[in-house]
Image (cartoon, rainbow, N blue to C red):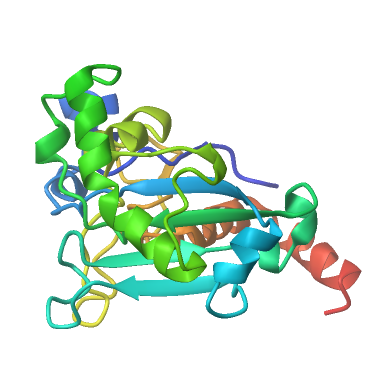
Length: 241
């Protein structure tokens, strides 16, 4: 018979606050004290690949790029490393004919503190967006051989406040700052982390770690634990294993 319970992907910063003091276990409280990664800047674009635009692209478009401002500063330095993906290189049908979808972002290196006192929609917030997104525009310009600000039919700027609001992540954080090389098992396994029976914690705060693949894996581990062994066997049989 399958288990019953609740699977939660609430972050480690917020998870303990969902329960009373009596319901919390020490490891749940400890997870809330784990240092958190900084946030992101994001730049989603839709660019029309007119003959004039194509003529300035120095090389054939690739699906992924890494843009580095200064190799001596390292990946964790703000305003230094930008990752750029052009998914329509692999799946052209994801955009209208003749368009490229571009996504540039910083790898969890944007501090939240500078955004904490800004209110979205204000002139100060918009000015900060323009300032902090400059490195993203430079990265995209290197790929296209020109500044694409006036060429983009869609241009959006995501900030730590964007992540905080729409991803429901305190401080817009990417997740707990865990050094997998030194302590790969410090994150809790996706199992009940409170004294309340049947509450399982998955997501960016559970093993095997932060990031979309790891978040999906922790949910898979939890879901797998909820199924009956006979159900597991039937699924394996259906896929020929």
